[in-house]
Image (tube, rainbow, N blue to C red; front, side):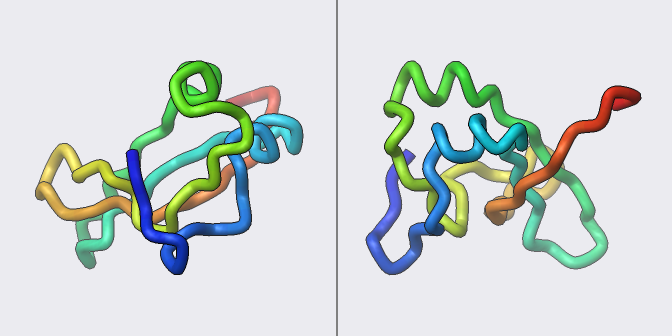
Length: 79
């Protein structure tokens, strides 16, 4: 995963994890509504806790192959 400085969010992988949130990507195609949830522990192992997440993730939608946008979610016990 890479991203230009102007495309980076203020969130780091460690910050997302310590806030109790999960990292998701939402498809940019209207009416697609596909999203992906990422394994924070695996990303932290690969990139480090201080890695800043880009606004447009370098991942494509599994349904329509369009880019996924950065999104955070809070999990509840009844997930």
